[in-house]
Length: 339
Image: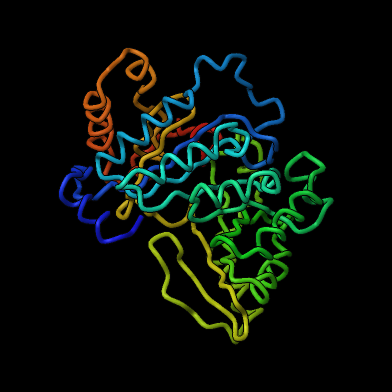
């Protein structure tokens, strides 16, 4: 919430999570499940290990406890991820309870959209602030190739439902893969004519279960920008954000387009986030292989202050430049940490 009272409550009572390099950590990405109903080729193998037991995953109440504790430590922005977060049966209640916390200003969600028709209105009623929907192609055959599932019609229908309703701000994430979907950039840009969404072209990252990263299918942000500049000489360049290197709109278009240089550009100096996995690990740096185990503390009857101290420890361990500090042993799949 962004009211004057909420801001006063935050500044008067909430400590800030500041790392050793004076970065204010106010953003948490929380994976509420490890399950996914797709098997995107750049994310996980078809045979990706499934959890045989739910005992090693966060329960709904543990998720609520985590959100409450981080809110009390100055976290204002929460993004719910997965796996596919809409597979979490209590996702609506998680959003509702998070939105009631005075320090949480925004609760956002990243989804592949397959279950949106069942849950969208409930999520809106619970107070969800925005949705990032991940769809990497607008062609059925390619969708099946990329995701290994024949679910394109449902994904497309739910995307259009979301756009037509105009109930929430929408960002559409497309991971650009050379020779797979890189000839569809203009098709995605066309969506911004009629709808006030932000289409975001995202670089492939080397966290893909070692499947396609080394096959020459990476297309860098500079090349994406070159393609767009040539296709749209009339584009209006907008002020970019910390993560969006190139943002533009077109005359008479309702939406805008952005490029996310997820691999070629180093965002470490602006990093304001920590990640929490569905198995209860605090990940303070995307490029770090290890995390801090939170689950044992949650299940030991520890106080909220003890849990908060673990988050402060994680923030203190954030490297100044994780990308440069990373060894060859970085994680192999973004699904391990919820994106």
